Image (cartoon, rainbow, N blue to C red):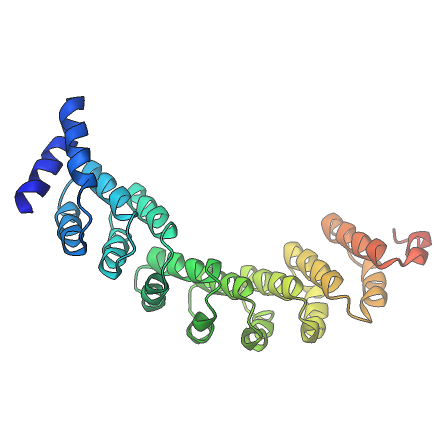
Length: 259
């Protein structure tokens, strides 16, 4: 197998189309799990072009060792190789893949962590809820935002209390993400904290809070928003308040001078 791999790698980097096609053909014949693992190990020590071809080939298989080998390419220095490995992993449908991702959500590499967290959300992995909640206090606000969005996609009630607490986060992007979560999942018990966010210093957070209140349709929302309109100065926030009020059918609002 070592000789075959060497022949494949030598052919892949040649400009001669015939020899390159021969190398690609030999590559396509490698299907055994152990042989694929040997191929991946050799490719990690090779140049960019070989890594690219090997990753594309590995994406055709869902062996556990192959998934781990593809994950290894996520740590590559080249962003293109990282993205290629991402796409390869995205194409694999396997519970083993998500088991591996669960182990990566605490990785010291933020790029890998973010990808693992995002993938668990897109895969709607309910068994990831508790592990994700355990790292929701991560010091990196971008990681907290991604966790919130993945929990939103999973849609498990166990996350609601923790997300409501995030509406008070010190970082605006986290408050924004938490408000979007509450509106998307229509979390009624978040209404009080969402109303408090109408006084947030960041306009985008206020806009999202208004939208969320409109999605949830809290009983007191129309009156609260009508009063808020009288003192809100930001155009985008005012427009969102008016939109929500229109959808609520509160016609008397539009005779108010505050419009």
